[in-house]
Amino acid sequence: MATVLFCPVTFNLAETTRMIQVARALDPVHRVVFLGYETDFADLVRDAGFEYRAGEPAWGRAERDQAIAFDQGRSFRSPFTRELVDARVRLERELIREVGAAAVVTGSNLTSFISARAEGVPLFYPVPFPLTRPQVAQTRRMGFVSGTGRLARAADLVATSVFRWIYNSAPLAPKAFTSVAEANGVPPLRTVSSLLTADRNLVTEMSWEMEGFDLPDGFELVGPIYAHLDAPLPSIVTELATAPEPLVYLGLGSSADRRLALAAAAALGTLPVNVIAPIGHYLEPGDRDRLPRNVHVTPLLPAHRLAGLVDAAVLHGGQGTVQTACATGVPFVGMGLQPEQTWHVRSCERRGNAIAVPPKHVGRPEFTAAVRRVLDDPAIRTAADEVRRAYEGADGAAESARLIEAAVTGR
Image 1 (cartoon, rainbow, N blue to C red):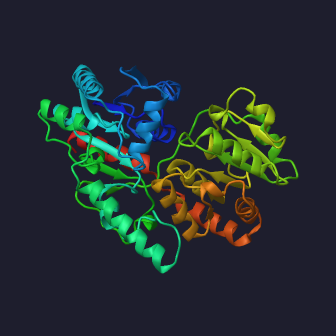
Image 2 (image 1 turned 90 degrees about the vertical axis):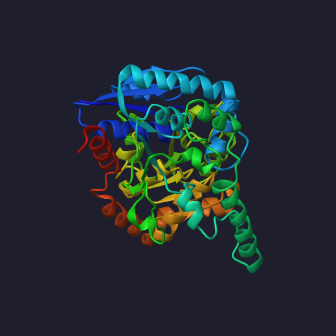
Image 3 (image 1 turned 45 degrees about the vertical axis):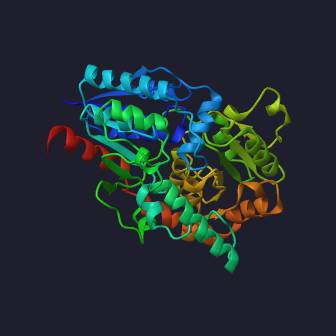
């Protein structure tokens, strides 16, 4: 038996559920311990039956938003102070020793990249491929400048080149990580990409998404990992599934905002469809009363069980929601709020099971036209079914667990 310590960012829904899936795939003989700092989705860990340790210091809303922007490459400003990084690394090192962890599995909890190495424990990181060091190094155009004209392409090449240098080469990691790493006997983390590169980086993509890319040492393709929430389906879902109107799932994860949630709901309210929308965490008092009558706010849904019940989805583009739609054969409109999400939506658009729409187009005719098309276009529905069949048997959580267990047992 070995102890495996999981350190997700517990205000990130996709990351928390990804860690839960890997933990579930481990042999029950092993002890699993979770550490989290924020409370947003900590109950999902407890509900899954895992031991959970609440850590301090935790962040407020403004710090969380800044951390997400930093992690997603939308900002190089960081909320990580020297005091916070030092306190979290000390807590994590003590917990690793207390539970006798043989491995640490992180999401994007950046202090894990110091604490695990300081304790000499292998660090595993199940991670989407976009914005990893090799993806940034090997991508000619990141898509920062939209458009297909010569000037747009040239501008995007320049923007990508600058971003590549900043991300993979420039010594722009927050000074807190450099100084705390040195204080703990760990080689300093100087670049942004070094903050997000573990000993074993487990790439959570399908094989076709990796065409044209080479994975360097330390990176291994494991396959898709998406949430399997234990919550029951609300009765409203099955009721609406039997109604004559198409049923649309509006899933915005944890990286959207109130403005986008209300705009998407309002736009879908103009269509002859019913909508189930687990967006309550974005709404303020009184918002629900102003939603269109065909938009039904629900708790977080076990979206992996929506196959055959919903006809289409509108998604923010996070890897977990995209992979769930792919695995269940649901065609979707994806908005892509940041580069990682845009990458996954465009990958599906090329595959034929999705349409990409910029988030700024929500509320425009282009958005509702895209929703109509994924509902009515037989070619898109055929592609969605082909992708569903391709997902059968793909299990990134099981492959991740196999690699972790091989490391902790010495096999």
